Length: 64
Image (cartoon, rainbow, N blue to C red; front, top):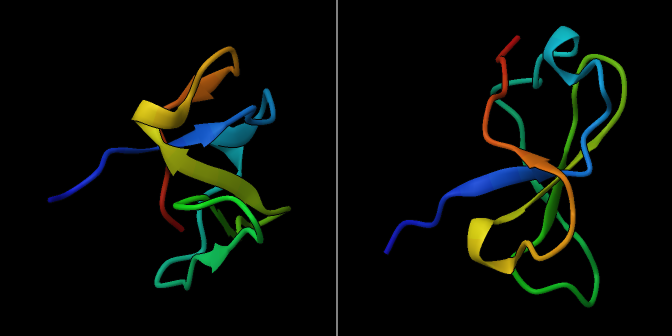
């Protein structure tokens, strides 16, 4: 099934840095189901919502 992906520990100005779409999420080694995705400034870490514990996260992302 589908998983809700969230941006983990996002930069405070993430809303000003749209995701570069279409883009290709890059797997994070040794972190199942976690990826990085480019923004117009820097990569953002994406992980399934169920895997978030004490980290800050957001579900609101902009596309470029």
